[in-house]
Length: 322
Length: 295
Image (cartoon, rainbow over all chains, first blue to last red; front, top):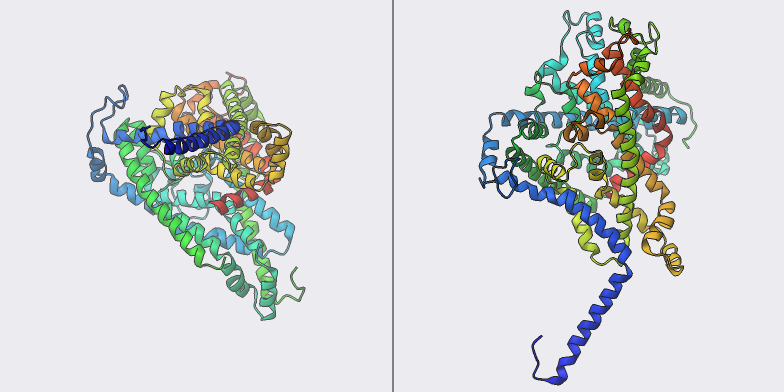
């Protein structure tokens, strides 16, 4: 505190500051339980979210698990360069984007269609029963599903038996051992698993369409399909748009749990997606720094896509009818 | 609800077709699960011959007996049940508690706390740095690795938060007048009032805990500490079926094969969730709605 030459002006600002400080302290003491509760959450986040963020620094170093992070030598962008020049990279990107985009194109409209037709069912009990049954697969773990698929797609499995009975093939095909079937298996099984669950949001959105609109359409002579096209779909358009944008922004992500279960050394050329690549180089090959660098590149791009999606939905929300 | 007028022939045909399509979808959804069930209830050796599609050829509960006699499998089930119960209870209460604190407008530093959490929604350290953290915390091969890293989730916090904001302040103020401090208010008033949200988050997290296999794969090598999903993973994806056969007791279960044990294990693992989920439908639906609207 600087001594002020003017004695009269000295006391006031300090006194006010001290009084405010005491009020603030009193307020803090008053909410000490709240603060403890909040601090516990903050502490958890710092440990489990932010400390790993600091750990990203090993992507710029040559990290060796025996020594500490600080002891590891700095190598700058070396790992990033290695990753971008890696022979497997084009294939990894191809697998990631291929699977994601086909899942999107085929798998995004299907729950909507399912919801639309479910909505048309006349019996409420049948409708509820179908809906409940439809999202049973969502609750199965991928390990269970992988086990089922392994059984079905085996040489002696049901699929081969069926195709042989139909005379479509002569010899059983080892589906999980051939790269060319992998994408199909992954996409089809994911759609099967999530169809009912994804439809829930659309069904709920359809339930909130005002019945007066349907009545008005009936008076105007609209048939079933016309009502779908001109009443139902426009009303859930907002929901569809948001979910579509989010889905597109997640194109670099893969269903890690699913692919980890279904992949094997034989179908690797088709099953190596970015997330699996990061896992494999990091854990199986113990190339910690390299794996972190690869993961970081993917995270940053995925983040940019997500922010772009966030921004886009906000803009659309403002201009839409809702 | 809809005006009752005569259906045209075209519409009746559509209705019929719709019902048919829905039945096909139901069949395609249920059949894989039925197939596993039926094959697990068939005598193991006989099942190897294949061809069991609709009903067991030779009914037998031997495979299930082998499952319950297998110490390794039973231990794994124990781990799963324990991690689900403990993990869910802790997750729900800890996340809700922090959410309550964050929901109070008078909380000093509230914006900073929220910012802290929001960043974590968009960015994370990644697989290896997280692995290093778990290792440094001494959680490798430790039961708590299933609990502590899953104890908190900012997304769930947001769901709790939006619910807590709706609670009338009068409730909280009345308790304060009676002299209760914030933690007591949270435990004795807020939580009981928020049961729907609590139930929803508990369900979502419980299902996740039950089905999670990767945590065990990544962080746990001790076979006694692995949940049943990780146990199954090592069998399904890594084909270490020797593991199961090794646990089968000598000549007691002669007709059983490693395949039939695998299938029986899959049924026992999935049965709890399958039996329970239809009754909890409204919680899942509501949870999805809140999650998607806020997200």
